Amino acid sequence: MKTEGVVLKSKVLGEGLRALSLYTKKLGRLNAIVKVQRGEFPLKYEPFSVSEFTLSQKKERFEVVKSKLLEENFPRNSEELNYRAKISRLVIPLPIPGNHKLFNLIRNYLKVKSEFELAYTMFTAKFLFVEGIFPQLRKCVCCKSKEIVGFSLEKGGVVCRKCAKGELLSWNRELSALTVKLTKEPFKKMVGKVKKRELKKVKELLLSHYAKRIVSD
Ligand SMILES: [Zn+2]
Image 1 (cartoon, rainbow, N blue to C red):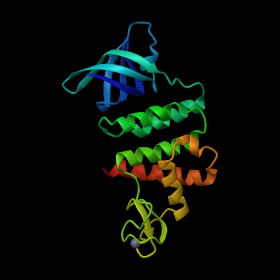
Image 2 (cartoon, rainbow, N blue to C red):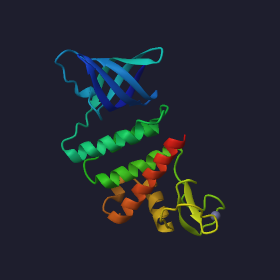
Image 3 (cartoon, protein in one colour):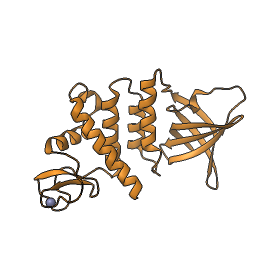
Image 4 (tube, rainbow, N blue to C red):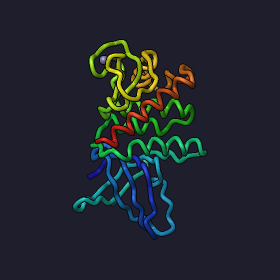
């Protein structure tokens, strides 16, 4: 099976053997082992590289039998490393099937070289949307009222005064509108358009929502 894939994580298992966490276009999220020549330091198996992999499967185990580097995203500084590692960490926990849209999203966002807070927040929003775990932001998640007073992590959406029970995150309609915009618009269009404080609120909400969903699933 030949497929394009992104290396999310790479671990040296021993002399000449590596374990790769991949997201592939055709097979989705999978782990594979690869034999590396002694003394070789192939960029195609480094985290965040995009390669064309030929995989063989024996029972549940994948092995990389051939590969060709398409593009490397080797971090040039700690900001790039932190940003790309955070993107990887969002994708790694989910058993996601192959999806062209998601593959292209990951590939495009790994290439970003500045405005990391904005890029990470936008990637998270788009990722949750493609994955079908985007929070309910427009109307009360219980009764569909538009008078929202906060966000309930428990319920996975905004709530109105009547339905508000338990702990709520502070949230409003403007933040909902901003989140929807960050989900729909391309990254370049949003550069310089979002205030730091609001961006932080959106990021924290999306990450908390995601953490809650992967724990309860
Ligand atoms: Zn309600």
